[in-house]
Length: 278
Ligand SMILES: [Zn+2]
Image (cartoon, rainbow, N blue to C red; front, side, top):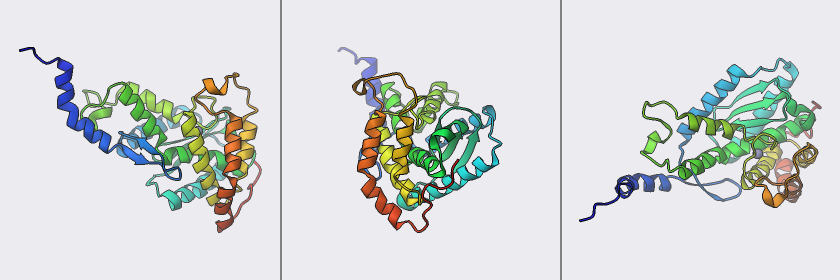
């Protein structure tokens, strides 16, 4: 009798776990209703995010701009409350403002927000900053990081024993996974560093504009922000070659969703318009 190839028996033995992982993997994205594949638990993701957040804190120079710090805090406060009231993410919010001249900001899984001072000229005013933060928070609430990591893990065939999926034999975090998460975090609004896919970006734009309006900021600000972003010099890549949406497409979609988001703004108890200039 011919013996079974080793990979078949391995697969067979791990099958119940794979099936379990797939079952627990299906989630729905708020406001868009899209089904997503997510096999990394929030607890695993938050643990990794915390490490990345701490590392940024120890390696990057913290901003000493008191006024900017206060504005960022106020914006995060309002946007996070809007997200919680609509979708109720169980996040432990935290903020780091970094003194570095790059137009970037991101929200790590679990609500750890990093804002670089180089975003200021593009954000231009408080509402512009809120549009950036709301977009990043939307990525986190929609679990785009986990989804992307799941895709990477699935591609690597790393669907192994249940909860240990992210840990090596010594129980330490796999450096490759750590790197992947770093990439997730840096996957930012601006598309300069490492953009998410077109689907994720457009989804975060849409959800983010809702959070922006619910937080009491004029949702039209998101359109102006992306208009300014489109003026950042980038290599000319045809839309169909890029997985990242063209700025023109984002602006157009944000314009389309303005009537819907305007309703959230009209219903907001406190309205701040565009806030203070930065
Ligand atoms: Zn984004």
